[in-house]
Length: 245
Image (cartoon, rainbow, N blue to C red; front, side):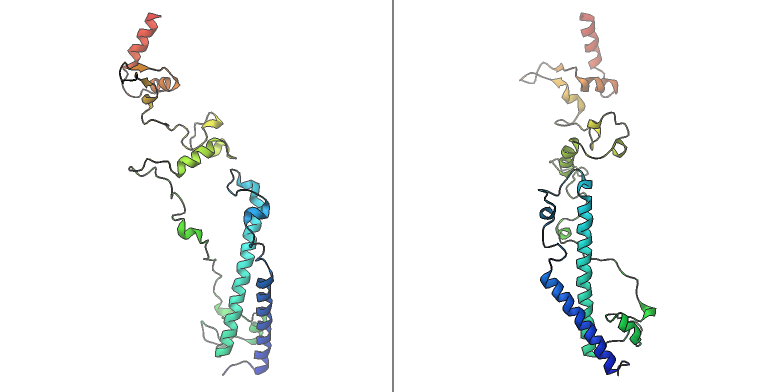
């Protein structure tokens, strides 16, 4: 037998029913706190992929707030329906943890509660995640193949490298290398060899038939020699050229 009187149960039932009607009316006539419109339409941007996230920082904050408000309203409606169901089954007003009666004063303040005040659990964080995460997994490094020896194709890191080479809002303090001399060298692996594997391939040349090997004394050649890489067989040729002059 319930520890609540019929009058108390009727009062709590009416309170729960009013909350249920108000919430259902909200979802029927509201646009879910603005979530019915796409993010790009709401702020007039053609794309949300921007090199400077700070440009839409305020809009991102407002969007996150709308999502939280909508989720809170959905959860509240679920709690109201559960309380009404427990009222019909005769379980209403009983703590689900201790199985002891919950005082009427507490139920009057929070009619959807399932716990007595001594056994209220710590609030858990939301485990509702965007559906995209089920497809885009793992969340980081999914398209980066640098660590795979059998992968040589254009990957996600290469794509970001091209975008980043045009400039970002980062300062040299955020550069991957600690030897940055120019803003043009700030993007990821700015010194990466492009179009060839070994650095000497950029300045060793042949004729159309692969013969008559020559050296193009470029910046890459000078850096190669100064770093003492490879065989020093190129130096005598350079000396001979200077003697001829």
